[in-house]
Length: 66
Image 1 (tube, rainbow, N blue to C red):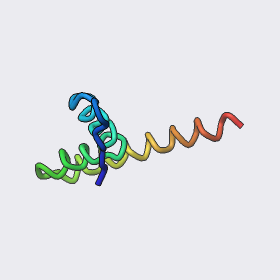
Image 2 (image 1 turned 30 degrees about the horizontal axis):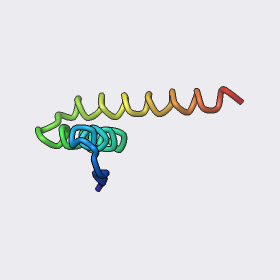
Image 3 (image 1 turned 90 degrees about the horizontal axis):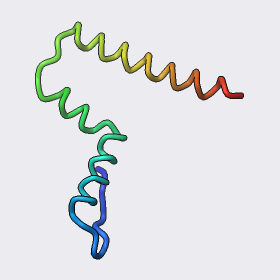
Image 4 (image 1 turned 120 degrees about the vertical axis):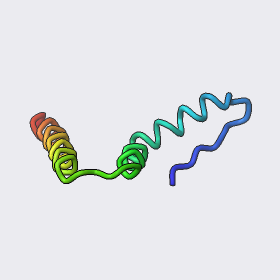
């Protein structure tokens, strides 16, 4: 579980923003939204295909620079 320590004198809004960005980078919010309602098999296939395409694009960019 991501954790954010509020620094002395730091506004709560800024700490919440840091927490939200951590949750977003770890994909926790997406998973919560996904688990909130039933996902049809078609939606599941589309979600997985989109994730695979994103992963392949990142790998292609990463290895193309060499």
